[in-house]
Length: 453
Image (cartoon, rainbow, N blue to C red; front, side, top):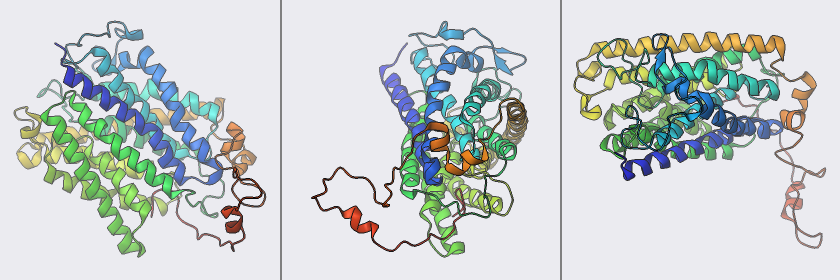
């Protein structure tokens, strides 16, 4: 029977999660140089369109239809939204329309490939990028999401206590580890940006970074609390622990940057908040608020260290997708195995190590290893084939002038020859930009790319 309150909440949560993907575009766009801001935002924005269609046609069926191949992938029972209608599904959405559950899950399928784009920012050929996003959704996201989220996926906890029962309330393994492992493969296959390590690649717009973080934080309440599938106590708990972990991680990363870099970094606080949101995602329906603080502090610490390690290597993971999403998702999955409690899930015996069930931690580790391995290998194969057939990167001169112009024929920022921003004022009006343009210019100090502040 359909419950109107549950339906209203899930639809609102779906809208919140949709808002996250353009928010991710602003977050990533702020990190890139001015000549690549528009192209970076476009990579997130267009995924909404591309995967939004793929999911309705076949992606939902591959993910949530009954399994074929021993829990590896769904069949085509729901192809083209067949039997996905106005009544509850009876399996996943018992009090809301099946279509409401489908569109909520669509938002996860959309944002996951968009997360990967931060690994190859500023050098991707747009035509190849579109093909890569589509193939990755078919060959990586849909199978992995089926493993974790479907009723008969081989990693799913639906059949608890049989088999491998990995707990993943809202996508720590299926989304963040999945995207992080793919990002590592992409950073290696795309190679380093022209001038990486020798030229300044300072973020062009830190206000965009903070704006994007705020949008992500806001949308994440739908991401996690909406995964309860109802306006319930578990949804309320997911909302509380999501905010708590993000706050703890933002503060931890800021303090670490203050201690080591001698300044409380704005970028660091923003990156820390995202790391905390990532880490609490798999645990949000299973842990209590005080444990969420521990998860947030761990996310701030581990992701900060991962990003610092990346800066000491030659890996050009442009926007630190591996360090924030890969490592944050891994820590969150492990922390779920440590701190899960039946008091929150309402399922007898569904506890973590600290509540007397060490086997849950082993299940979490199995899921972490399986998703890291599968996503990395299949992503690398996809990219290698595309590199041999279409080419992954833009030409060197196109990279030099920037992707905004070379790929899209547009600019995010139009600057007049005088250096002043164009205005709608008449020549007789006082123009404050003209006065600003006469001030002495200073060259900004080089800063690390990504979230390494």
